[in-house]
Each structure stands twice: as C-alpha cells, then as structure tokens.
Amino acid sequence: MTRYDEDFFRWATEQAEALRGGRIAELDIENKAEEIESMANRDLRELHRRLWRILEHNLKLLLLAGPIRQQHERGCELSIESQQAEIEFLLQQSPSLRGRIAELLPSAYRRAVKSVATGYGLVAPPECPWSAEELL
Image (tube, rainbow, N blue to C red; front, side):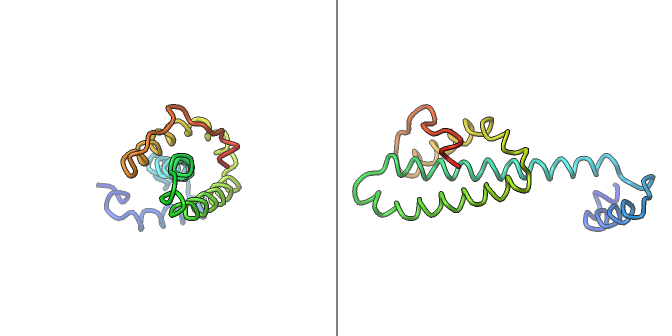
C-alpha cells in the first residue's frame, strides 16, 4: 500500500509541501492527476445536480394545478432562484463549465422527469421545454 492508500490527509499535505518546495521528484504524479480530475468532476456533478433541481421545480410549476400548486409555488420559486445563484457562482469560479450545460441538460431533464413522476405522479413532456438560457 502507498501513503495515498494508507493516509490520504498525510499524503495530501506531503504532496503540497513537495510542490511548494519544488521537490518535483517526490510527487506522486499518478495519484495527484487523479485527484485533480476528481476535483474537476466534482464541479461538473454539482452543475448537473443544480440543473436537475431547477428542472424539477420548473416541471412542478408547469404541471401542478390548483391548491397543490399554490402550496408548492413559492418554495419552487425560491429553490429555482437559489440554484440559479449557485450556478452563477460556480460559473464565475469555472467559466469553462458554461460550455458543458447543453451536454448536461438532457440527463438532468430525465432525472427531473423521473423525480416528478415518482413524487407526484406527473407526466412531463418528453423533451425539455426550456433552453439553458431560460433555466439560468
């Protein structure tokens, strides 16, 4: 087992010290590369999750009617606004993620459709009725 497998915290702090000290030969390049990729994928997953939530609440607002819509309307609107703000912050930190939104949208929409079908018995349109710009 490597230090990476035995004690991640210690491995990470040692790697940071080696980088700061310019001791390139001491770096665990393969595990370091995997960790960097993992950080990038975390932001991509966060963007997907937030798009899914916006879509889920938009579908509720589109499909719910009567008193149940009134009961959920303000909460959905607040959640949408919150998710939009969080996406905007994420895109400020990682502007290149903006180009990935169109790619993530179909998967996020399928997940939102499944969620409203399971939770509310609602049948959503087969294709996403909103553009990325409208959602953000």
